[in-house]
Amino acid sequence: MEGQVIKYLKMIREHVINELDISREMKDEEIYEMIDQYIIELSKEVYIGLEIKNTLRTEVFNSLRKLDILQELVDDNTVTEIMVNGTDNIFVERAGHLYKWEKSFESKEKLSDVIQQIVARTNRVVNESTPIVDSRLENGARVNVVLPPVALNGPIVTIRRFPDKPIGMRELLKWNSISQEAADFLEKLVVAGYNIFISGGTGSGKTTFLNALSNFIPKDERIITIEDSAELQINGIENLVKLETRNANVEGMVAITIRDLIKSALRMRPNRIIVGEVRGTEAIDMIQCLNTGHDGSLSTGHANSSKDMLSRLETMILMGMDIPINAVRRQLEAGIDIIVHLGRLRDKSRKVLEIVEITGYENGEIQTTPLYQFIEETNSKKDCVIGSLQKITDLKYTDKLKAAGISL
Image 1 (cartoon, rainbow, N blue to C red):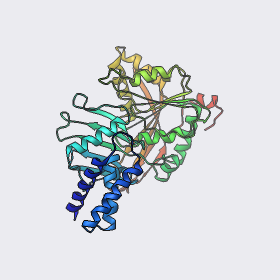
Image 2: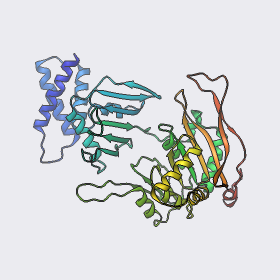
Image 3: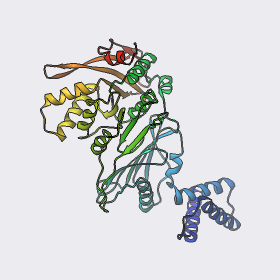
Image 4: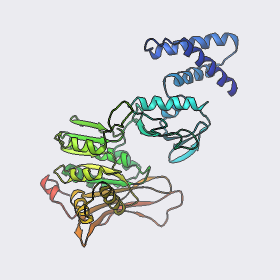
């Protein structure tokens, strides 16, 4: 029966495409009406059950106006990641586990059409000469595309799907990703204007945690967010400016980088600047922001630990500017107050693993002090990690808290 459904899908789609009025923008209702009419005509010749009719109606419309077979996954709240490895191999992540999906694209041309549809919505370009691009969907999902000849097994699409409702600190507490004590502590630091950097590996929940922390920002402040592809979900801030990078294209449009946006943001009278992710020479400008009076700024970066994050930031800065390493480290020590490191444990849970304070600069090294650390208990199992985020020591520098009238 599956072969028959595919046959009907092709027949209905071809019929609708031939009947489309390309001289104007047709409404979705008109497309649905055309699909319904042809299904009725087809039903007069062969018996088609109601369930199959509904499937045909939805999938034909998705193939014409949406993301074809991927639309079903994009609309599924239980899916957190979609990985398309060419036309035949599609994998999905649910609850931290990967599964191969039974459906596949009928051709490379159809997959290419879906890719071009995705990138066109954000004014991006992807082709053989520019085979890598970051984009996003209308629902805010992050999209990465890699095309041949870079990708050897066909077009590769990775979609990171975010929850329809932004996850806040309440949900993170419910999932035991952080302790109540640590959450209250970080809330006070955000309100008082401490510069906080969030580090972690891929899929550790950095963007989610950044969104949760941003909810603590006082609602009367002016916030500017800077991202490669806009995905932050900051709610409740009226004076919010969202900036996004732009790639260069063949029509002569020059690239607008994170560095360009940070420099521009400094002239826009922000109270705080939030950089979605630092992964290159823009680290120079981000640290400059933190050292020019923009207290309370937030950012994220990929790293294996808080110390590794500082080393990576050093490297990123040195990639874009030839200055002494001691000067770089002094800038980092002066600019960043707190590093929150996240991790994805073996049982697929995401947790805050450590909260570290930058406490000074001695003997050519940045000094750090752990304030909270995740301690795993001895009765943990392979598929169930048991532990808690425990306080190690008190915050050393409380000047910003005192200035804001906040007591720990």
